[in-house]
Length: 262
Image 1 (cartoon, rainbow, N blue to C red):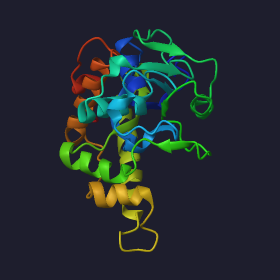
Image 2 (cartoon, helix red, strand yellow):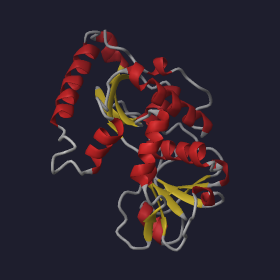
Image 3 (cartoon, rainbow, N blue to C red):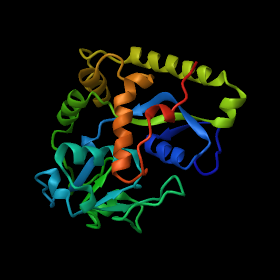
């Protein structure tokens, strides 16, 4: 989508979208936030490293799929704002390329010859990885021992349930068919509302899965609002993370990134 405009409508990672808008890609997001997640569990390190605090990541090499990888942006922002980690002291080692080809990474970012974050970690090429998913080895351990509790505390402090993916539509299509954005918005909101109603209550036997705990215990109410005003604080924070991490050069208003259904 960002390179060839292949689709009329597409799901897109939030950071990819922000970079795309900076390079004036001709599509615009609706306030349809398809996926969200918390990120304390996203950092893995080697068991032998025995990091006692996130500050010990300073001066190390951390593997990540791309520098503009949305979970990476959120995680780096949390490491800096909550734990005082100096992000500039870290060498960021990429296992893949950037979605937006025009984007140039800042100093301190290098590429690996490997494309598997788990392999990069276990081989000792990097000291930690972000967003690798499960690594089936006793030599890979989470940085944080109690990520769910830390995520809950972070949410209570910030009131942010981080947006990961959203929905974009080609600008030409929005101009040609101005009624379309409301049709798309209503369709996805109806589906989302149905999903929220289907979630098991916390006292049901299957309510101990991570998603339900996050949505029910931590966030509560409608945890996935398709509303710019309700999501504003999280969007504003994420934009500031992107500026601080040298992904875009200056702050942009959240309103400028979205078209609002009428």
